[in-house]
Image 1 (cartoon, one colour):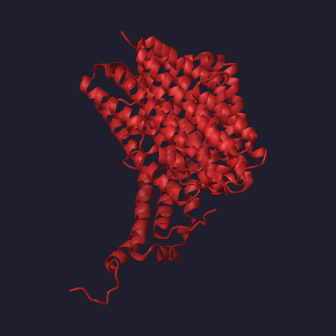
Image 2 (tube, helix red, strand yellow):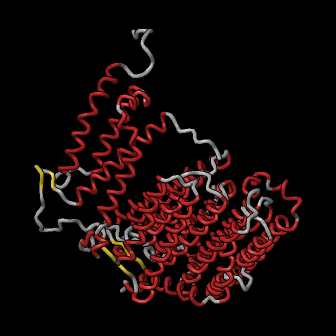
Image 3 (cartoon, chains in turn yellow, purple):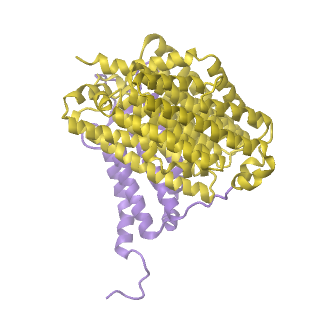
Length: 473
Length: 154
């Protein structure tokens, strides 16, 4: 219980303090990194508790359930919280090593961790919304980091589209309260069964649209390429590796966790949208020349795998969705961070990331792809399997196009990445590559020894399947 | 009808009312916090009342002159952060005692020291923190909208 409170308190209090201090000073940047590391340690303790003894629950103020707000850490939430904090830590280290250019950045990264932990570790729909807004506000400000024209444009697009998404989410929350009369997730999951199907499906679609906007799934992806390509690389890593987790987690938590019946009904739609995302993202990524833009389209394709896995469902599908979200977040964080630095070590790290996205062993992406393929085979659809293969092949193609252009043809680079010269110019110190290399090693280690990751995602999927079956008649 | 000599902007009535409303708004805010536990009100509403008075003042006489007349407004960022810390401390101190967060002291059924109608308990200090946070943030927002800081691009 203490670990659960501390996982919120540590980043929240430290983040407030860091926002006040001048983040351009190196010590403040490292303080931010240390805070994130401490948060990861607390979450690790919490995860150990959760995986050993099951979900940890706390009602604020010790009120009876139904009056107080429930904070709950289960395997699914803890996995996503740990993942996001690891990505944030990598981004914070990378940014500090490159030199922070804006005073609030370290504090905002830490506050973002507080918001994300809050929304991953709550058992209440409205509390989820509050922490969701808290992390989004930090993300809006971070998107503008750099202060150039491109960053401001990206920030305006990101903020306006996502505010719309948040508004739809809020409408869905209001709808949930209207039809079920409660906002605690457990009670909503139970009472939604007696709700007229039309109302229930309308609310479920609201949640789905809100999370798809956040995740950048195919029909809601239009904001994503500009934003990911124009923000600073470390911010893009944070957006795709940490903030996008809100979407993946939300789909899992609200889909099978709350609206189990509705998600079964719409399985085909989810699979079709996911497959469309995979192909669309892959094809457009091949056509792009700037690495950041290509990675942005790649991100659209990669989240398609998560949606396909959710659509297929069942213990295998949900475990695959969790596993793939984890793998994808780490891949994207690594690849976006490599766009800011250069050198042979970075080239090696990029290859690891590329292999991981394509799903080639020994990188951890293989494990993720394998899980998604297993769920597609379970679904018994040859078309789906073929589409997944096409998506993987496309990702291998576009990533090695970039590899060739960026790391082999050094002399061409000036023409291509003119916009990024400021980022690439000072980035030739060995120490600056450390975060990238550490992430790459993490990906390799996960590929060589995948059992812990697989076990954790199976445990996370158990949470979802248990809540759909356990409360049933 | 209107005098062509009148400077553009709000009329003298708006300016006077804006100035006169400041003190009562603080009184109303205190009342909202103090009474919040038996009647309608809380720190957020109190903060909004004062924040609106500050915003009206800025609209009426301009943010620059409003701040010159009330130098305390310059401490708004400190108030916001300080308030956030007070609120966090009031919410999370039970962690140190091994209780769920947002448990309050004195607890249920315990004797509460009161000063007039004000009850001294951690739930009130939480609301005071929220009040400071809201007032601080609104004031900073008004200041930034009126004259944005020009941070040199790095």
